[in-house]
Image (cartoon, rainbow, N blue to C red):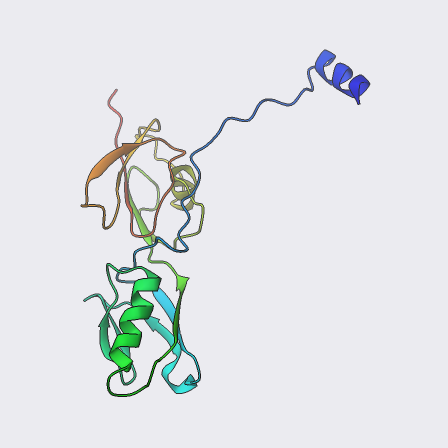
Length: 179
């Protein structure tokens, strides 16, 4: 092993040290639902009440018997409790509910990219990958940074680097460079 390392170093083949990149956030438990998210609701023992649903533009999830339950602004765990509460008093005794996010709401990219628009969220995506999905930078793009508006974070616009993580519902703006 030592001989291989010496030869690799001598001939310029040594591996470069890795530079830590901003890691993708864990969306499993802390994720806050919003319009456009697709979820699976399972009411144990009641297949007729279970199914796949979308969080509507008004932030509610329309459920059989449970009616419209507010989903936007809640974590999947909080929504489980809200659905159980909606079903408990009149329809079921001690309902057990599970909520799973099937697909996250899209993110949006605009500005100096070749194909601005909305794109489906993929776990672990960063700004550089989002730009690639949008066809790459235009010749007028400022490639050193972008501006991101995180959905649900007070809608504050922040300057971000190309390795910054993208979250569902984010709006990414690629600015124009000045000559």
